[in-house]
Image (cartoon, rainbow, N blue to C red):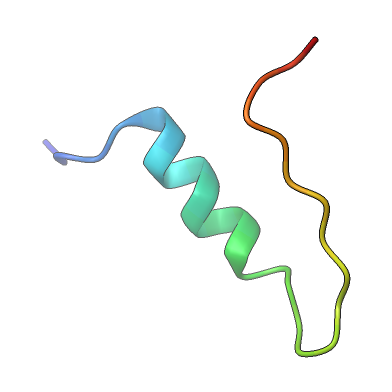
Length: 31
């Protein structure tokens, strides 16, 4: 069993999609 939360896994997967020079808008929560 892993010790990662779903949120941590989501951040790790999303970070692989970001490349140098990309512009990223990050929000803390949905409105």
